[in-house]
Length: 383
Image 1 (cartoon, rainbow, N blue to C red):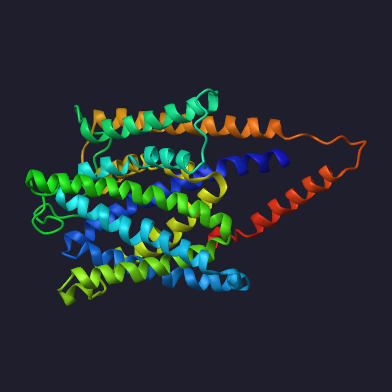
Image 2 (image 1 turned 90 degrees about the vertical axis):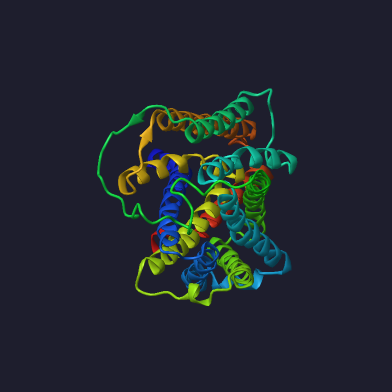
């Protein structure tokens, strides 16, 4: 029984991160549906965090109300930064990069997040380079292979492959998302706009990476996941609404009916923000920011599968090769993290059974603290 619990404990973090990337694929489909209906993407972001706030705040009130007294200025500042970097600013930078360049380029830029997170984590001393160790080499090699796979996936097509043919396209081909944009991205722009879009894409990568690092700080400073997620969503909804009000002059864009717009903002808000942010927060709490970011390229694989199933998009040889490289890179990083954790465990001294000392008492206290940390994580099925 204990062995089975250990196995479940080990596979829980990667399963959470895989679920996050599956949700990411659903968000992309919803973005396409809403944009195809003519809805402003900035307003989608504002509604997304408003719906997330409505969903997650009651859960925080139910499960973690007694911890509200621990919210201080530092926690509020970290929540503000999380809402800004991982929410309103990061999302708007990504969409602006999308408009000024293309969906292909924007997706490729987002997959630089693991590398940027790795570099920043080393700079902030949250990860050790440890290139001389096997674990360090595996993490670096896995990160590079994952990024290479994302680049191959994005820029190399090759021959067309049709493993299945559903002939389903929920977006009408004669309508183009975003108004005047082509199906594969946007209409060509001048060189200056493309350079600006590339710069914004780099800023988006830095923003998302800083969010993961800030979220790691948040999980240490305030390890109450429902409340921290609620605080981030509240901040993101306020910031996103301000950005949308300042940039969108057509008030009719804010109207929601019983149509695809309501479906899109409800899904991206409840599932794509409340649940996704909760899962990312949990993953960062368990394994750190690098671990959470390394799964980002896997989202490309899910997007390609979903696109081929319900958007009638075609798979190519480059998609298969890139997907294999992405999965291989993730496996190498997980292998490196496992070796790193094993080395840390071996370095912990084991007290003798003959001697009752303060070391044994400290170990018991650490075990009890671990149980308390797990108690902070209420049943995720409620979400």
